[in-house]
Amino acid sequence: MSDKLVIIPTYKEKENIGSMIDAIMALEGNFHLLVIDDGSPDGTADIVREKQDDNGPRIFLIEREKKLGLGTAYIYGFKWGLERDYQYLFEMDADFSHPPQDLLRLFKTCSDEGVDVAIGSRYVEGGGVVNWPKNRLFLSKGASLYTKIVTGMHIQDPTAGFVCYRREVLETLDLDKVKFVGYAFQIGMKYLAYKAGFILKEIPIQFVERQFGVSKMHMGIIREAIIGVLQLRLSSVFRIRRVKQKRITSNK
Image 1: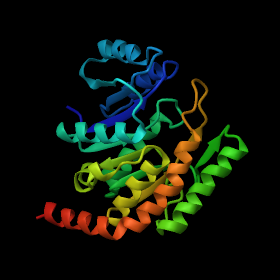
Image 2 (image 1 turned 90 degrees about the vertical axis):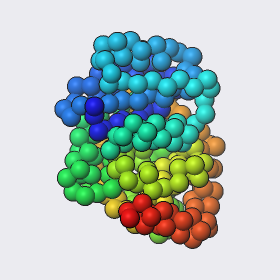
Image 3 (image 1 turned 90 degrees about the horizontal axis):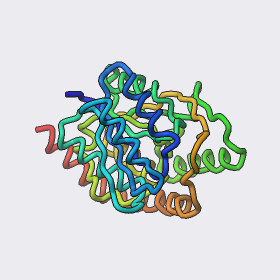
C-alpha cells in the first residue's frame, strides 16, 4: 500500500495519458494513480485499462458518463483517496505541462518540511512558462495579481494545478462546499486552506505548454474565476469560522 495518490482528470487525452502513466510508475516512492475520465470519446480510458494490466494494483480508473468539470473530478478523487487512507494527495494535468518528476519535490516539501499544501509554481523565482503565447501568459499573470488583491492571499501562482495536499487539509475543509470548476476551483482550494491556518509553500517548476491534444481553456472558465474570487472573499467570514472550528474539533 502506498501513502501517495496522484489524481489526474482526463478528457480526450489519448496522446498523453499512456506516457504520463509510464512516467509516474517509473518514479521512486511507489506513487499510486487515480485517473478520472469524463467520457472521453477518443479511447483515453481504454489506454488506462491497458496500463492497469501492466502495473497491477497501482493504477485506478473512474469513468464518468459525461464531461462534468475539473473541480468535480478532483473533489471525487479527494474523497476516494481519503476513504482509502492515502496521506498525500496530488493534483496534476495529463498533458506534461506539469513535470511528473517534480511530484517527488512536492511530496518532500510536505513530508520533510512540515508544509500542508505544496504548490508547483510558475511565478516564483526559478519557475517559468515555456511555449505559451503572450496573451495567455498575460491572462494568467493578470489572474494571479487580481486574486492577490481581492483575497489578500500572497500566493504568486494561485491558479496552479500542480499541488500536493496533506490528508489533514482535505479532511478539514468542507469539500462539498467547493462548487467551482476551473481556475476558480484551484484558487478556492488554496484560499480555504490558507484561511484555515494551514501552511502553503510554492516551489518553482517549469510549466511547458502541451504538445499533443487540445487545451480545455474557454471563456466560461475565465468568467467563473473572476466572479468566483469575489464570491470567495465576500463569503469567507462565514466559511472560515466553520472551517477553523472543524479543525479545532478534529485535533482534540
